[in-house]
Length: 439
Figure 1 (cartoon, rainbow, N blue to C red):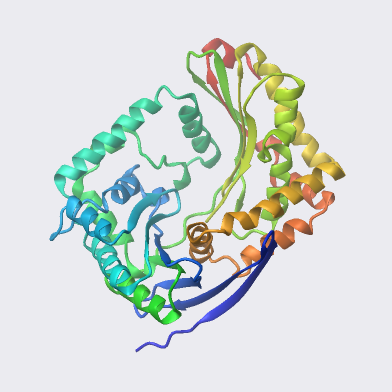
Figure 2 (spheres, helix red, strand yellow; figure 1 turned 180 degrees about the vertical axis):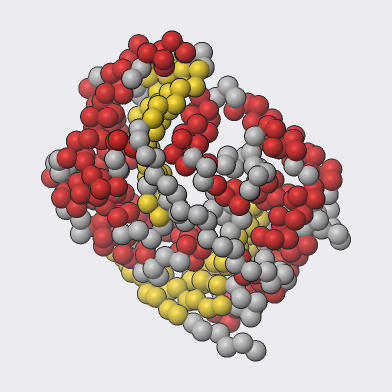
């Protein structure tokens, strides 16, 4: 039997009620799947997530294929119907779910840790992931559901802005592919394409397993071996191509008759694991990610009454995530709103944030972060992310420490280096006359 190599990282947090510890144990299964495990005995519950490099960035010329495959995973195997699968999990009090995004597709289960209940749940999970056979009637039903969502999105300002924004900042990169597909692509998807996508992507060497809960490392290894051993070996996929930053600023106008104009402004950000992420995260929190106390909310809502909803956000991804500012404003207020958004961003790039604002934001981030790890399920998400993206095993501990150690100049420098207004993509969704007049 292949020797298992175990690496351990101790993560400590201080928060109200004492220190939280997460001892991450790591190994590779006999089938070649990386596993991260955290033992926690507070509750008799186990959470498991199998993450595949099978998000929409792998759709190729068939947008929506990864999403459809994920949506169909629990719809049947050669031996069991969708109803039989659901009843099998319910019999043991387990909850199972699937999901997909741009980078990943995942299958998660929560079950009681008692072996008599957990073992059959793991057997069922391994069976449905590996042997999903995508019945034709289920394919048609899921196609209709996806098409209905796409039809409804055609009249949604936020959905139209999101689609245009992703195409604007990512260009021809696979990240520009809408995860839910298009009406045309979803209509053209076939069962054969789904079966082939599953065969190529849902493999042991293209997967990462995260386990958190009330069991020993020995039992965790048995679970990981059962899940990965049921999968075809396969191969890890080649890395996605690099993301090219837009060479110049551009404005994309999407006509939609409405009383307000929806604005989205930004550009690609940084990769997962980038050292710049921490300073950018803090800068984004100050600018618009900190709710009503952020700069955008104060200037757009409190000071000028331009919008009740103005914010910014920052994500990272396998290649590059995105930075964006968003708002919805009255049509006659659009020019002023655009000016406020651009000026606020430029100030963050040129000037250090005020000392009190910096201190408040750091305290808010570091104080709330441990609360996001209180439950097994919350911790599972972070552990799965660490494993899939190959982040430093001290990421959780380091996050708090690095945010706490930042000063105003570090925030300003990061915003200046990585967020360039001359490369911003601005999307305007609103009445044609209004958006055409905006600069």
